[in-house]
View 1 (cartoon, protein in one colour):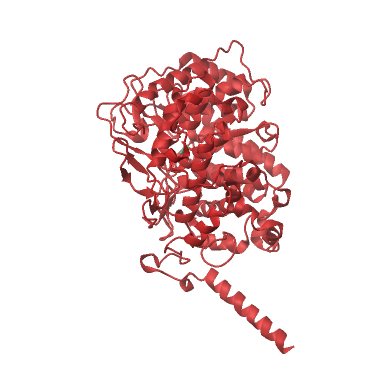
View 2 (cartoon, rainbow, N blue to C red):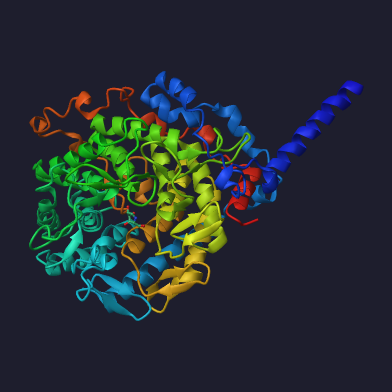
Length: 623
Ligand code: DMJ
């Protein structure tokens, strides 16, 4: 009896202490400058790196990417249900079919409100100003306005970017009308200086996606073929890509210039600096184009740029910086993170591998992912349980892993989606929850959120898709109704805070909800598409016989055998050696496919313990 009381007493004491650690920020350990972080975020050297590295050395590549999701096994996942009487669990454990249908209609209506008004008030200009109901083209009066001019090229950007969303939504007649309009009216022979990256992902990517959908003999979306179609979109894509090629000339590293003038090439006053994502996220589109045309040029320049960047990574941390000098190869921006300037670089290493099957891409991805986990990820080892702070990926100095600032940006919210693709579902669930908590607090994602101050650092929200993209991919991976609730929440706040007279407007200030008269093209190509797909369970994209991948702009491309055929083995003879790439220290490549399959028992698990969700809510200042 006495023995039982002692055990019970110890248990109660243990539980009380744990609760106090979780619920009372003031009791958490603090350290130096960062002592205000609400949960005493651990900011010393990253988690037990040495031990981790030793462990990693004994793992094959596929084991490594599966580790977080497989190590707990079935037993541990049952513990996700332990809060089943809790308010969080009750709220998120189901989602009625009729509500799903309603949300699907709402996402569709959202797309058409933006699209129809763009066609009515803005086409053939690039974007819709949704408040004044007018079109917007490049800012000719102010060429240095790169916020506008990097993206708008006077080529009906929004129409092009929206093409495959029409297919995904099953509107083939409007897709055909839009394709004909593009063929008849769009020309790239324009005196526009645009960013190579933006033109690539928004325009080139959409053109090749639409071309593939039009010509896909498997008819995954039904008969999408257009009478008399003569590969015009492919020709347009090639024309644009050729106009982007000057960016890859006269660069001593092979890393491209950031901008080109579509008529005249690299402007004479061009800067010699570019960001890692801008220069290193061209391979998916350029690679597909090369393989469609049987012309290695495009893939060659894009791959050369990736390799050049890769070789410049730190030999201590394995990390890359965010801005590099294309002539000297010196890092101008030494910040390494997952958001702006770097995001799609990682994404395209994995997606290029999935599409083209080139092992070097997978090796680079795995090495980059290991460095990210070792140096950017802070907080406890297991994301959903144990002591210490919930994990977060911070911005660090690429050379020593020291933390550089206390903000994370909204672009980083794409990363859980990439983690899903790599098989690291558990980390994806936890990082996504952090961003969702920020969304719940503001009804949007501020461009930068300061986790130390629990306040936004940069306040605008330009209708970005990253959180809904991750939400959609996590729903596909887990089938947990929690993610449908998240999607509904996002849809409702977009309706409430961003809908204006002729479309959806950028939030200028996520707290005051003031607006800017701009609707970026990715709202239609990504935000609406992912929202719609989240609620459209029966979409052809979700049929097991159809295998697709999304480009970083949300464009749909099939994973197709013909993209895996290497037509030009002779093009990269020397550099194909792993030694040249400096990847000899990495684990051998292996198939990632088994990591992407979600075992039955992991479906429908509650994504997060309620206590974890409370921790996160508290970290972003919700509680
Ligand atoms: C999109 O153009 C793409 O997703 C890109 O990779 C970065 N982010 C914007 C939308 O936020």
